[in-house]
Image (cartoon, one colour):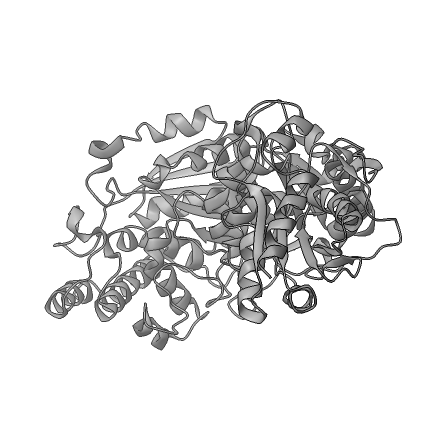
Length: 278
Length: 321
């Protein structure tokens, strides 16, 4: 079962609400990574609320559930906002982000928040964990699907390509990698640090089925995820071309907002801008 | 390893890596959730034994240790009991961030076996010789770190690893191991095996050094020094109780390990002794260096790890009592 299979207009409203949550929680925390959280909002919205991911917030340990791993762990505010929106966690918890004792740690921590599929934060590792889950499903003849979101900067980690080799070779059709291709990393634009393009051709040559989309357009995200979920021959990689800081005009495409929290007046301005779209 | 010295004959048995392969097959028959993965060294680590028997539950990842550790984590998070193996040096050193992030930190129930531990692998040389795996693995919070002395200890402890709920690492050896135990000996994680009740000195050892320690014990007996030998097959959590008892009753301790003196068995035992009952200590191990190519016996001799070195260390330490 899936929790929700909502119309696109409603998905857009959810995406906007999640953006407000992201900005507010990082503002309250006083540190965090807004840019790469905001870029991934449409993908998580479509995945969790668009009828793609098989999940049930009442049964987070349901063995048949689809798995989602946020390998780019610094983007966890978008995952926490999704959990709150879906009913996995109390929305009040969002304002405890990064505070001592909070289950919403600075990077996803499965000890503190057991509904997480994995602890992440050291880049490059989520694909391998996802492969383990996909292999377990194959061995047990179960039909759950595993989704892993990585960053384009994260793709510079060699382990990502160890996983790409393995997934393609073993034709793990029950595994999907989503690249939040927001074109920036901490120090600068990815194209200036170590250009990873062409991503689609790279993954294609590793035996994956690449689907390239505008990752901030729900109309494109939804069918791509659905196609990936239904794959039977090859693993899928979705190259979601996104805008870092998407939705907050002064954050969009600005490298500064990789890992800086908005000040109270900036939170206010961002929330105002986002609310105007509801 | 060399089977004889003048004083005490050691009967050689299987290599502990081969015992690992046997135990893994036993586990596979017992528990359908046991899965084995390897990084293109299955014939050397003996996980190939499992592959022959349970091909559907075996994966080789190719030469990609980081990916292997991550896959082990994913398998464990989905209810499997994965045993991932490679050479100790590649598993621990190349997979270290993954062992920390995907296994230790989230406390994942995955098991790791590094074969070809120490310098006794011989001719392949330092690039293949793990002399730091105890230190690395002990520095991962929550990890159990095991190094069995012989085939019987190895087999039993592989079963204990599978029963243990949490991350665990075992170092196995390439060379044949001297037989110290029998099929009816039982082993518990974190509980030392004590050989003899000597009261002049305790020799605390693991792996091949247990055999050498027993040789040293016999030699020392002839010279009027009564030693007991503690086989600390579990380096972490170390058996504080047995070590405290040995310190109280013997008043001096020598540790012996096929590992750098930094961060291994000696460090674990020294901390334990310092806390419970400080006594003079001395340490047999690899001295801040990498070894070289040579036969296992030549290397163990050249790098100061054989029985005569333990005897020397004992003589030094008892003078300080």
